[in-house]
Image 1: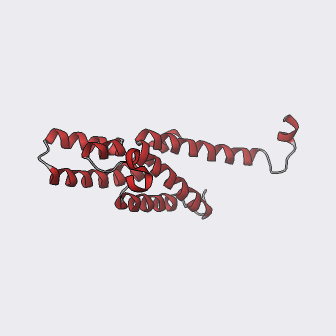
Image 2 (image 1 turned 180 degrees about the vertical axis):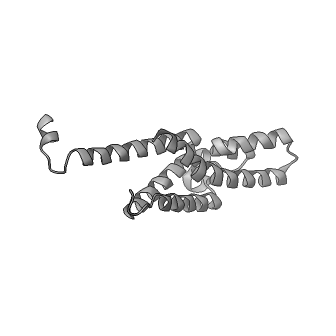
Image 3 (image 1 turned 180 degrees about the horizontal axis):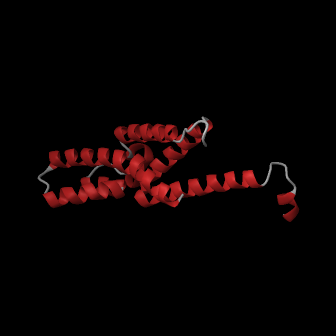
Length: 157
């Protein structure tokens, strides 16, 4: 439960969205002026961890200055939607644990988590992913332990 949030964020958000952003920013910076190798490495590293800060470093529109709609590029929106869909379908495991309904909830959660990654950075998406996992597992555990309509929880309240 704890490590899944980190590994899934790396695979579903940091690598695909971060790589797109890195390439996009390096191409943009290359057109502007001569950029040293050290600046390129720093920009690439920051793009994976703090996308909005990397965009500010490159002189691109940021969410903090232009809002969510203008601060996130069309390519980023496309990658966010794509990774959210893949994330949703990755949680479909018929007959074993998760059924078709999990695709929708995981896809929506993936979209929210991805949006938090683009706006706030890697730390925010890992924490949010962890929260969704803990909430879902706690809900599942309680639903298996205490049947619906049971008076055992209402008697203690």
